[in-house]
Image 1 (cartoon, one colour):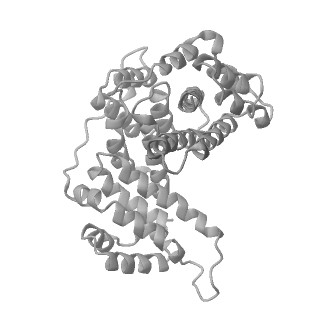
Image 2 (cartoon, rainbow, N blue to C red):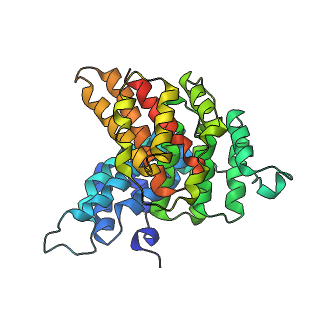
Image 3 (cartoon, helix red, strand yellow):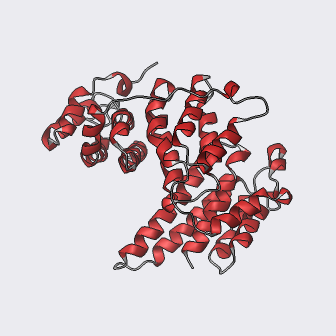
Length: 349
């Protein structure tokens, strides 16, 4: 059954935001939230328009951040006089995100929307898989083919997690632009979760795909990640049938390894050992890597803006990788853990 936030008319809110009329945005948003619409759903629906005017990518990140944080407000007690259905306590998050993304919303509202023809899995030919085709398109910087492949999966009615896995797998051993492609993928899909995928998925797929293929120079360390992952001796296949409970505490030793002067191959081996020998879960390993990134953030002095930006990107990337394993459990996404740990190791040196 559709929720209030998914069926309520948001045209007035969109118009006020485009006009950057602060008073109107606050007034309309307050009314919608008070009626039972959630900030996450409203931000998500606005995001579907913003996606067509957000070539930079950060407007969608802003809306997703507001949507994600607004859900935490459920823990804040409401005054007795407030309607239990009201989400008005989420107002500041929603309004700030809307006004910050107004230029992209303005561009998205008037942008023509065209999608490429889907490339269905059945059209790839015998012996060819979507996995291989996606890798070839990413490494070949073929934006159109990446988009066609994702639309092909969408057109078959594939489960939305399948589209997520194919995206993460395609870029799992690549690294460019401070990790933005993976950050965009995770947060864009997270925003779709707020409004349910269905017919809304094409908006985010179209926004995301230009960021995925390799189009800028990569750091040298990523070649070591690829080399480690491609070695048959480092197969992760047995994790698929492991039945024992995760032993996530066994991943804690990764912290000191990542913060050391170890090389990239040693870092990858540490991640592999935590998973295969230590019995840690992918999410547990991802959590330790993200926590290590927070430690690097704490080392940055107040006056060093450049160092702060570098450390912040490290934290955003590792947090996104951690979230991947809350979304999917497929082995194809696991190389992201190597990339994440190696990135933070290099970042702290």
